[in-house]
Amino acid sequence: MPTYDCVVIGAGHNGLVAAAYLAKAGKKVLVVEKRHVLGGCTSTEELWPGFQSSPAAYVISLFLPEIIRELELARHGLEILPRDPSSFTPLLDGRHLLLGHDELSNRREIAKFSTRDAEAFPKYEALLNRVADAIQTIIDSLPPALPPRFRDAARWWSYYRTFGRLGDDFHCLRVNSCGRRDAPFTATGTRTPWGRTARAAMSMCAKPGRRSHTVGPRQRHVP
Image (cartoon, rainbow, N blue to C red; front, side, top):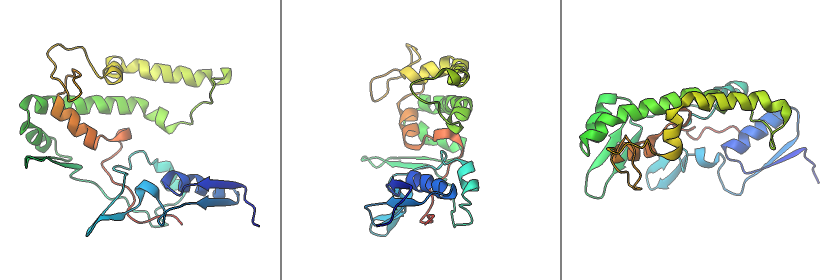
């Protein structure tokens, strides 16, 4: 019976990356997957007859460039496709919301539902960009161990300072409210300064890490 140094359960993109790094470090690795395809939510499947799509991954902005470079994924066939438009939301009444890279086009689309939301949408985008820029170093860093250790105090302090620099921006995201009495209600009944349409749109096309508007690997997986 063969023996392995490491067993990775699940051949999704996280499992494959972990297995690749372990193998690169000289470990004998076994990856097990119950499905008939590899890649998990980053695979490409025919979910509806004639239409191929990623089952769950909507952006690849959190897939660190360091991983792509260190594992030489481009040499193994990885291709990242730009996503523009970034989202299409059809409604039952025949209307739709189409958002992409063009700010003026996005504002015109949102204005079909609310001119006030259209005016607020750039502010919401700017907020997310400020937050993403501030926490990017946290996303890219190795997290400290739990429970906290004294030797990690400097790292925890840097995290505290990062969120402290966000000030009101972090407060707005954390409690989902800026306390503005004139702010419109969202679908959940919470007051925000961005409006229902802007928030609904961003829930469909928000960009974790805010690196880029891209989709996941298209049927090009590392064996």
